[in-house]
Every structure is written in structure tokens, then in C-alpha cells.
View 1 (cartoon, rainbow, N blue to C red):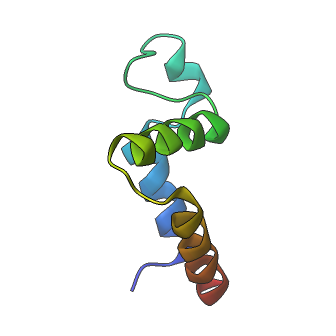
View 2: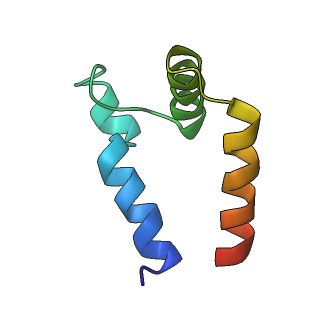
Length: 66
């Protein structure tokens, strides 16, 4: 079972969430969480996923984990 801290560090690494690195590698990193969310919405549009449903599921998981 992963801790919430481990989850946060995992997503930071997987998504390249690092404002300093973004200046050097804009194609593979994100400076802010908001940029990740925007691209996730584009992802849902492209693959015809229900964004609102995904948000709802994420809220349920988050509440269960905190």
C-alpha cells in the first residue's frame, strides 16, 4: 500500500512536475499542476473519456485516501 506522500512523489516524477526543469525541457516537463490538468482534459477529449466522471472518481479516491 502506497502512502499519500509516495503517491505525490510518484506523480511528480512521472509527469516531470518541476518548474526549474521545465525551462530546459518544455516538451517533457510541466511547470504547474494546472498545466497537467489542462493536458489531461485534452487527453480525455481525444480518447472520448468523460472528464466529469474522471473528476468525480478522483474525488472519491482522494476522500478515501485522506
